[in-house]
Length: 104
Image (cartoon, rainbow, N blue to C red; front, side, top):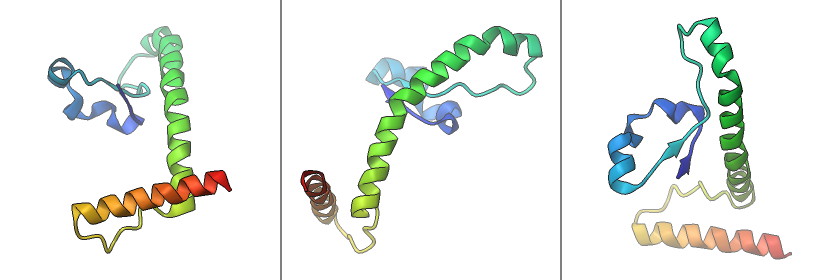
C-alpha cells in the first residue's frame, strides 16, 4: 500500500491494472468532486471524512520523519553527486548522521 496526498488521487499510474499485476494500491484522502449535488456530498460526508482522516493519520508520522531527516541532515542537497554509487554514499552517510543525532 502507498499512502499519498490528495494531489495523487487522479494520478493514472496507480490504476486497477497496476493493483492486480503488482499488488500495489494507492490510498489518498478523498477529493471533493466538482458538480456533485449538495445531497450527495452530505450523504457521503461521514465516510469521506473518516477515510481521509485514517489516511492522513498514517501519512503524518512518515512526513514528520522525513521532514526531521531533511532539517537535520539536508539530505536533499546532492547537487554534486554524479553517479549511482555516489548517491548511495551520500544517502547512507546522511542517514548515519541522522542516527548520530538521535543517539546524542
